[in-house]
Length: 523
Image 1: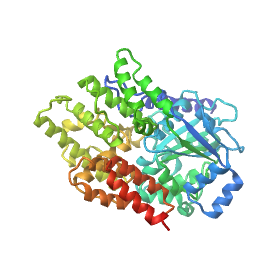
Image 2: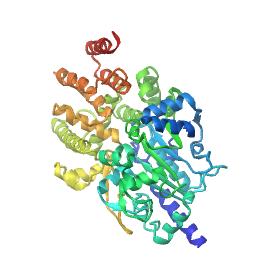
Image 3: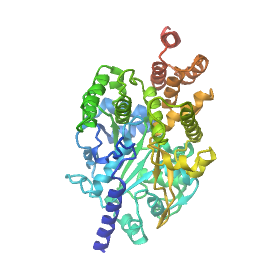
Image 4: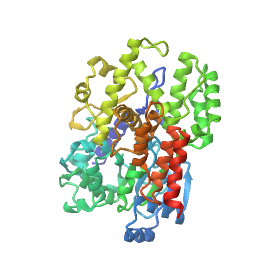
């Protein structure tokens, strides 16, 4: 039996290694893919205290309040080797919550964890788990299953990293149930669940169903039981989420809270140097380096690795194609605006960077408008995955769709396995922030203030409104939408400041800040 289990483990590792070799971030301008192995970032780890956990549970604190408590009372430290977050501290395998801003690298870290496991580079230290089988599940894909019921075997077989040789059969499933401490399960993107699924996972909804791995139940109930250790107890479970949506998990107790802190100012410059390290790129590196070093705002938003990548990628294209080294992007909306334009121009091979004909501009704008409508429609429904039919409904032609598949705008996911030998192709935008930018383009164009979207979407909308004539009326409505609800609403205070910065109008900023002061401070 042991040789059979070892063979199954090796088959899984081979499949994972192949399917995680390159990240889904856009390829370089010479066609090379960004390698997952080359991505790095910083982690801050918060070690939970069992007695304090019980007190907090009794007080029913939200996740943000709990994290504030942890920072006050526990040891926190920078982690040089991320495998340290898995070290056994209580005699059993940990349940971990990984948080970080949009674009900070949560999904990339999840992929790196399972890739390093597949290549025997992880869990080699003393006191780290002995993992035989690891499965990565994406909430955005699971949400598409709606009310479908599954048992644990069927759920794990939804991993997009499995091939036909690594699908879990009944014999292997029995082994997993009998040896849960040798299993790692990564649940990536809690914030990309449907709102209903998030509520069900975080609540006591799972109590309606037995704690039985073989019992079919709704996916949110099964995921909730996994996270709480009610099925496959003592397995290692890692959940990733943006901080805001992670608050919904306030009543779920984790053993460890991990925050990705991103690049330090020094690492931003180091990233620029490494990006342009190839021979022949010395002058471009010099221009980009100087542009970043003299702009504190760039240093600030480039602490997010995705922003650093997009900045280097975008400026490389502009400088190498046009020689333009002035008026380079210095705000996040300008950066994404430039990135989308570059990608669309690369999509239409006949469009050049400069001196575009009116006809060429018309084609590019039509493509952007179609993508923006698709992005907004999906975002309104909290959906992040779509298929070719969704694109055709919005008027995208066969040629456009084929070009989009290799453009860097969209990523083709393997999809959930429909049979042991078949998967259905699914598409998503290369990154959620790209979908949010395109959505904001649609909302501004249609003068619409959406209700349930992320703060990042509002920031992009403000940046776009700054270049619109007569955009003041919509901007004032938007500021009202994101205004803090009370004196303690620090999240919306920060969001409003980000919006005002992207809009860049001093008088509106002064007026808004004064209004806040008189409302909350002058008492």
